[in-house]
Structure formats: structure tokens, C-alpha cells
Image (cartoon, rainbow, N blue to C red; front, side, top):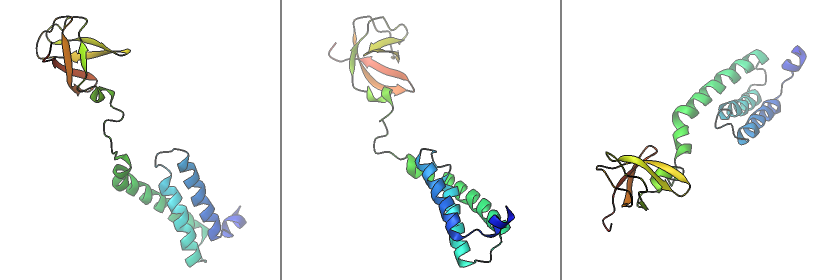
Length: 152
């Protein structure tokens, strides 16, 4: 084992870096990016300083993995979470502007409304009778905010 560790070449670390990069591509969500970069960094360091002992290589690998991982989570994670369509996965917000008929009275402005195959919890500022059409004006979490539709 010690002979193998003493014979580590830069391309070994490059393979480690690409191996972790490949695992990251399988969907780990950024957890292995720092480790992959650390492998590439160690390949460069060992290429520049071929006499670097295996124990220092492991120390550099561990420290650089930690630094790159923390840097990713603190600095670059938000960049990956940006979306051109913030409402893409928010079903409640996607219903804003939709007109639906109240099948059960909204007592004290609260109740449920059937939209498609889903029964939604709704809030209104007033009591609304069954059969009245309401328009979805917003969402508070998964609760739809509704108002009487002006044409009803």
C-alpha cells in the first residue's frame, strides 16, 4: 500500500477528479464538485512539484475539497438555483387569474374549491355563497386567495 501511495502520479489525481465529476453528473446536486476540483488541483500540484509526499497530497486534497465545497455552497449555489420562470413548479401561483365556481359556501371567507382534479383551500375577504364565480388573485403558500368575479 505504501509503495502505491509513494508512486502516485499526476494522472492518478486527474482520474480521481474526473471520477468525482462523473459522479456529480449523476445528480448529487453539487456535493462532489469540490472534491472533483480538488482532484484536478492535486494533479496540477503534483505535476508542478513531483516530490510532494503522499501524506501532503492527502492533506492538500482534504483541505482543497473542503474549501471548494464551502465556496460552492456559499458563492455559486444561488447561481444554479436561478430560474427564468420562478413560477414553474408553483401550482398555486399558476392558477392566478383563473375563474372558478364555488360549489360550497365560503363561510367567513374560507373553504375549498375544486379546480381540475384538485381540491384547493381558499381564502376570501367575505362570505361567498355556493354557485358564485370567484377569480384567483393570489396564493399564500398552497392556499388560493380569491375574490368575487366582477361578472358574477
